[in-house]
Image: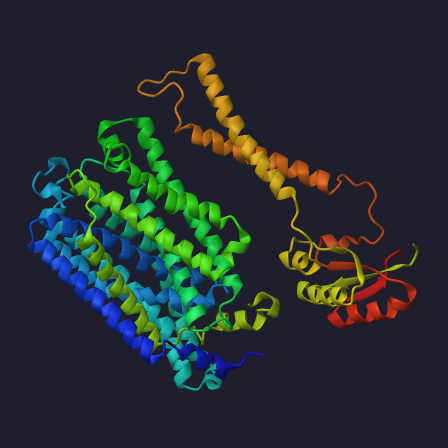
Length: 415
Length: 169
């Protein structure tokens, strides 16, 4: 029988105060160093470099955070039991989203360095590609999507904190209040799923595709939001591994979660690869100069060709080959390493999509300032996750399906 | 061999797996297990090695890739399918041909090796088989000598078997 007290106690155990302090200092340090590097970059001799790496990190980390929240929404939509222990971990990076909204506004000051079509307008696209309309529609889109994600996180967390405040058993007897949140989640999750696809497509078209304003690919938006879910799943795998190894939650997160999350990651690995190939194939066949130029620059130029192959190998070929094995999927350490590789590969993919459109130099613009700015973004999201999990239960303790999962999990499926 | 075995019929997979664990611990001889669905739990409990069918599927899939690419190259060379602006033997579209052939031959080899491995078709149904095992029940056939019968019966019933009866009727 399930021990509720034990569960509630465990779900509130987080990082010890000492390591919390050192992690806090580490992440805050990363943020400050990143911000300093960014500011010195934009006032320095090469502002374009600072702005392009800022944009790369913005599209990568924002997509990742929306992707992990989508995992939580998918659990609600599909009524899934298996992934419930990971629900709160999936919601944690969502706390980065309000900050990301502010980061989007910062792009406004870099518009001259980012959007070439300001200097060389394209008359036939001017109705769509103009600064006021772009920031208005993307800003509105991000506000809406962020609001829905925060509402999902709020309902999910509030149900748990209410249940814990009311005394656990009492709340189980009287599930009326809990049903209110459940209904809200059931309404919000499908809405979020649809908005996720629409708004992230818009972000991809406006913030990545429009950097090469003559180039277009209608599948580009889908490739971006599917890739974002792929990065979200990889990030979730790392969080699950950390929760298991560092927070001692092996009693609630079982090999099964890793196995199923691994299968899902394999699926989205294939889908990401497929969407890449589908775009590539059509462009290759059509052989139209305005379409091929984008691809040739990235896959055939002296500067970018090895980089492009590296992206293909580490974000698709290696994960595909490794994830075929059933046993590997159930080894948290191996899966964390692989997820780290996937994240690195997908980050490089975003870099490959953004930077060649903006950078005209001979070498790949990757140096110490790029590393520091990236670290700043990482520090921000890591700090958000840490503070969120510090404050709220790390397991969805009042989620009926989570309790159902624990009640049916057999000993042989545990560690 | 008459009356040497007992069949336990189970409604739930977990009960069956519990029974198998006990039977194996006591080193009783499990002749066969029937299940309406494939289950990793049963295989793991029985300690059965994973089926070699998957390797045949892999071989078939790789042969498929080779066949697809080979056929595409051969036809392109034989009939000179020159498309403007494309090499005579283009690599990009062959990915699709390779993919389709990979699936096709993979499936054929999978099916063929499964038939051979399971020695299908079988015209004689084993006497312990029960049509329910293809519907919604699990079954285990335990070989045991006369003195062990009560013990096996006890284990199966304890684990939650719906019924236990002799294997040969």
